[in-house]
Length: 135
Image (cartoon, rainbow, N blue to C red; front, side, top):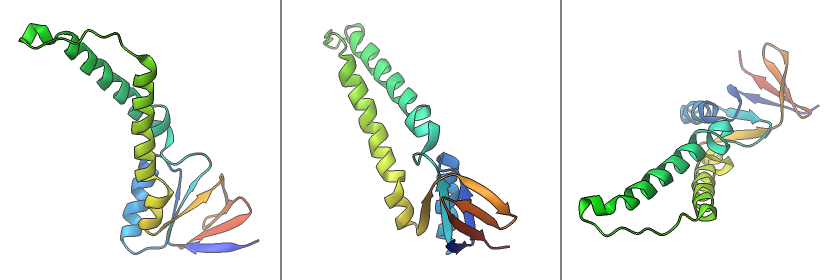
């Protein structure tokens, strides 16, 4: 079984894991992050970012509908839901690019795709590769 040594091994590529890995790598440590699914976690893909983007779209739409109350022309076009969803997807995709594998690589952090299983205090198995964290 192949093994690789790291100073810091972050398990979970959600928001907190990404921040931790980038900060640790910025300190000139050898860093890897383990994620079995997509980097960014629930916040990026199904939680915070999509929800806040949709809420922002709703707020803007409501403001446009009330524009006449403020002496502005109102655009009372009906909402086009597929356009709103496409805009949300574009926001998520942009953030995924900014926080994805390329961003980790530019921060000198390795990305190990897979589930982590502890073998000992300093050994983690990720898809047949042993990642050794320094004591």
